[in-house]
Length: 154
Image (cartoon, rainbow, N blue to C red; front, side):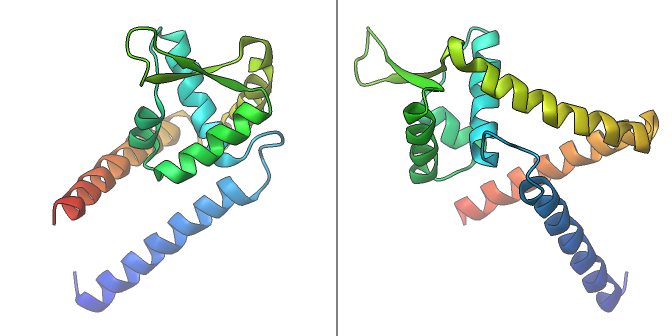
């Protein structure tokens, strides 16, 4: 591929990526939670369902957000009564994060709203194209993780 054509393609990919990000974050799909709050609540909810315990450090690693960003989101969620911090009885330095069962509905309603939109997206794309998109998105995430890890070591 010629250099000019390659640059054009990378610019198109960057634009599509940014447009998709704006579409996800900027369209006010979420009503009660911010994008980062939704991501963190999803991780905490899934961990709870699987019997896992999650710390703030785990969240930083999984979300790739800065510790300060994660702490701000956690503080906001805790003030609103959506999560609580559960100190480990064996190692008092470790604190696990949990969604308050009585307030899980906030996350579950947001999840249902987003899932409905994704279902419509899949309906318009069709089954085969949706499966292909999932596969490609997972591949992009894996490559981005590799590139990020390589940059961190450089």
